[in-house]
Amino acid sequence: MPPKHYQLTPEQLALSEERKAKKQKLQPPQVLPTSEHARVLNRPWLDLNQNAEEGAIRFKLFTWNLLAQCLVRRELFPTSGNVLKAAQRLPMLHAEILAQGADILCLQEVDSLDKLLPVLEAAEYNHHYVAGPGKKHGCLIAFKKHYAKQESRVILYDEQEVRTDGDTPARRGSSFRTRNIGSLVALKNLSCDGEGVIVGTTHLFWHPKYTYERTRQAGILVRETRKFRSDLQLDSWPCMIAGDFNFSPDDPGYSLLVGDDLTVEQHDRLETSRVVHVSIDPAVPPTVAQAPAEDEDGAVDPDRVITNARRAVLSDGLLSDSELISLFCSTSPVRSAYDAGLKQLRETTTATNFQTFGNRVSLPPTANGYNEPEYTSYTHYWKTVLDYIFILTDRPAVVSGLTSLPTVKHLIPGLPQKSITGSDHISLCAEVILSKVTKTAKVDL
Image (tube, rainbow, N blue to C red; front, side):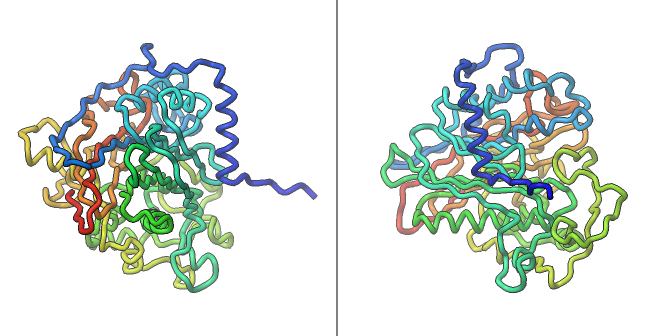
């Protein structure tokens, strides 16, 4: 009888990658690469002229999906040429990660740790890395040494329960076993007694048609972030949630995150995606002769249809729209740093040289999400907004600065692109000012 395949846990995978990285320490890292390969687009800082009161806390957070080297396929990025080679991409990635001097980094699709970790350590970052079960890439949170990791938690979306009744699959209410994760870290501020920040990063399920599953994962992320903070009795600490959410601002997941009502079209998108994939129910008959790859590796066509799945029934436990709304606990919604910051820039300056998501899709200027970036991912096959920095806090908070965004002329014909950026995603960075802790507080975004 053949031996059973042993599946490493996310913690064991992370430890294995870190051990590999330590073996490379004898090679001196090139922290600020100056070669031609390391050139990236200069993106000036947008100062929003926010004055900080005495005792206020200021920090800068950066988020980026790096495009894991293990996921690079030339057929996915036909306009990128040789920049897809690791020798050309990695110096660009490292230079852009360090360019803004952020206090906290949230990175997704992280591999090549043996090259990245020495760069981070030389720039005086500590880090926390975790990967989903069986994944060759993961999520990394790095933080400057005036922060210390107090506690961490990994969210395995496939194993999270969303109801108390029914059998195990029904309690989970999942439509697809995706192996995606969220990573949470509590960071203590060593330079300010009693202060700190809860940081969460994630990479939600990629498949465009699985709206329900992605919305479920986003709701679980917010729920578990609140619970993590509560369990540690750190309710005065703000939560920063950043990463690749794989949905745009007109998606049900975004609307529920920011506390908006669902539109009729969003209700329809949720309903049509309430299915059960063969990864949840092995009895589902295949709908194609050979199932296509169901991970980022095979996403050549962005308009994929749902295959190898059946319509969900009541006993599958998938959440209704009202149950999804309850999962997000919309009485205290999150706020987007870029949506708030670019709105402020638009209202207080005469700047007209930037476009937003709302300009491109004709949203009402007052709508949440109107001022999100025009694009955060731009390739030959897909051009959309997927990445965000969200703020969850009851304390007065303002966005005091942002990294400016590239214009479309810099993104054509598609990312990655030499001398522009080494990823298919656009990095985001925001500076947030938090007022000192008071008994009564109001979010000022």
